[in-house]
Length: 219
Image (cartoon, rainbow, N blue to C red; front, top):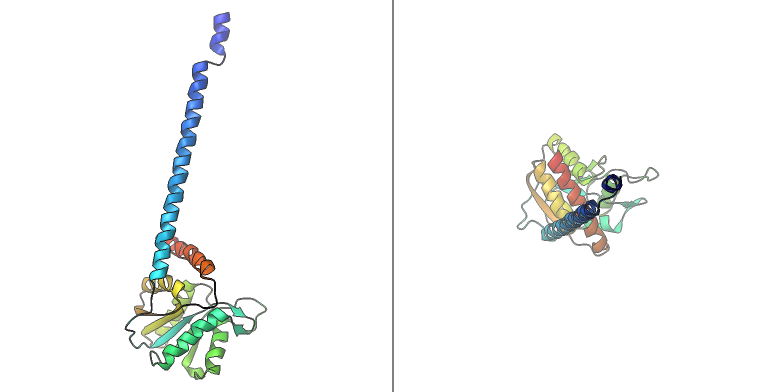
């Protein structure tokens, strides 16, 4: 009877065995977690390097159109960051790099009077660009849509080449999307920002670039 109870009870050997398995599982989970963190950090460092490597096309060839990618409106006016893109676009336009603009961006908020595209057009016209030299693309809500919808407008108006105008931190993703969409020799016109926090925007761009690469992989 005593022998039977001992056999049915908890075996010290079994207790040690279970503890050993739990210990190995915890160790393996920690190793997997450490590998995932290391891989994530390496990926972020790689993306950060790509973001910082983007530069204005040099030498820049004359193109049919300059596409200004949208940013937030502040009420009826472009935000300071968007004004930087517009001012750089105006600089390239006055240098004769392209004769027309496509301004691309949808409505930020339902209570806003203008879409990003409309706000950009107003700004360009106020600074001397003829209205008929500015084409509106006012439906997009992302960089991918900016470039895809602008490409459709280009095809409808027999425009073949473009300079894509945005900020430096945004240039690499914009270029890769344009290449994915089979733009004809897309060029970049990139400006640095004096008004935006690069820590904030480059961090956001790492996440946006990662999302883009995942979409590219699965789609």
